[in-house]
Image 1 (cartoon, rainbow, N blue to C red):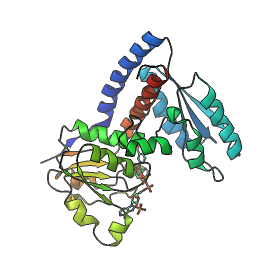
Image 2 (cartoon, protein in one colour):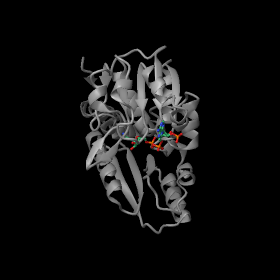
Image 3 (cartoon, protein in one colour):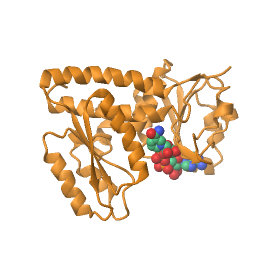
Image 4 (cartoon, rainbow, N blue to C red):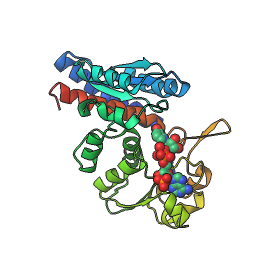
Length: 288
Ligand SMILES: NC(=O)c1ccc[n+]([C@@H]2O[C@H](COP(=O)([O-])OP(=O)(O)OC[C@H]3O[C@@H](n4cnc5c(N)ncnc54)[C@H](OP(=O)(O)O)[C@@H]3O)[C@@H](O)[C@H]2O)c1
């Protein structure tokens, strides 16, 4: 048996077309174009590459997406001033701060300075808190992308044993809440699980497996339960090639559905950023 691939590129094309239809309708009703700003400190290659995929997604859906580049030596105070400026600009509907930031910048403080109703990535404590209370449509983009692909498999998650490997704020923790919302039974693994020698046992029990470790090929294919749905969030550069956290070649013959890396969760992330932004725009213009 070979798993069905959950193709992120194809998913993204379809989802962007649906969002464009929504944006066209909203522009027709309001006469306003949604406008999002990405603050980038310094000008490094990764910002350019991540930013490019977001810019392409914005063009596909017909919204304005622009960068505010700040110099690498910018102070925290100057950054907070810039965020306040964008918070106060009524023509801006969503703001994000590109990560990583230079040493000396306190990322959490800056992200929490973004008004919650403009927090494009949903990473501030207000939106994270609302997510944990099941009260928000603004969801951090990578967990939202992982869930969207999982749901696209058509597998009913209710009562299924889902195992999440990784508990970062940016991926693992939001995924836990999103799986609970779908009534999955959730186990969370982390480095302590591995230290106790228990990771393989938990992975072997997973009907749904979501992995976000940042460790190339760490999850062995033979650990994957026959018929499991595998969502590999990992993006790791090994010998110039991008690879996931799951040993794909062996896992693909055991899983029922699996995300490839690259071409799985990654391409859907920018779609989810647009989805968040459009949701915020709707709230700003009274169309929610
Ligand atoms: N597709 C995308 O758009 C996208 C976006 C963001 C991230 N990513 C990728 O997703 C991966 C994870 O990113 P992240 O930001 O969540 O990473 P992170 O902040 O480094 O968190 C990694 C998590 O994995 C756990 N972990 C590490 N080694 C482990 C081990 N041996 N056994 C069990 N658990 C272990 C850590 O446990 P502890 O908590 O105990 O330390 C931690 O919770 C990376 O490859 C990253 O590049 C992809």
